[in-house]
Amino acid sequence: MTLAFALALACGDKPETETAAPAEAAPVSTVVPDDKLSQAFGDKLFELDIQHFKPVDAAGGAKLVYSSVTFQPDGTWLAQGEVSVSDESMACQEAGTWTMDPATAKDTAAMLWTISKTSCAGREAPQDLRLVVTIVDTSTVKVKLR
Image (cartoon, rainbow, N blue to C red; front, side, top):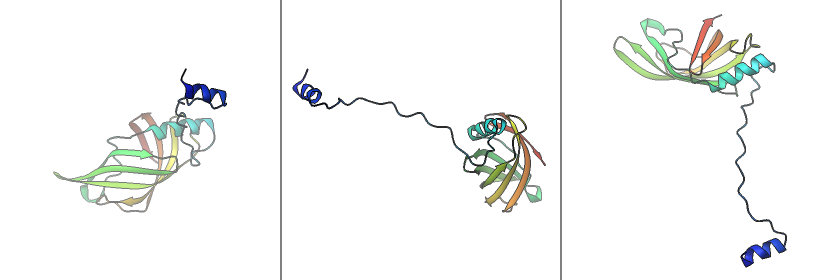
C-alpha cells in the first residue's frame, strides 16, 4: 500500500473509481399521444431511417425520391432526396413538422406532415399532407393519402 493511498484512507478520502456512463434515455416527445399503441408507434418512428421513399410526384413529369427520411421527437422531420427529369437529376432536401392522431396499431397511425422548406424542383412549401402511415421495418413504411 502506498503512503498516499494509506493517508487518503486514514483521512476519509475515497479512492477514485470509474463509473459507467448512464444509459441513454428513450426520446421523450410531446407530439406522440400518451397511450400504449401510440407510444409503441412513436418508438418505432424515431428509430426509422426511411429509404427510397417516393412521395407525391413533382409537377411536370419529374420524379422525386427521398433517399432518407427521419423523424425527431420534437415534431420535426428531414428528408434528403433527388428530383429526376428524363436522364438528369438534382439533389434536394425537404423539412417540416409532423403530428399524429392516436395510433390504431403499434405500427399504424394517421399523421399530418407539413412541408415547411423544400429545395426540390416542382415542389412548394408550405404544404400539408394527411397520411395513414404503417411502419413495415426500420427503413420501410407504407403510406396512404387520407
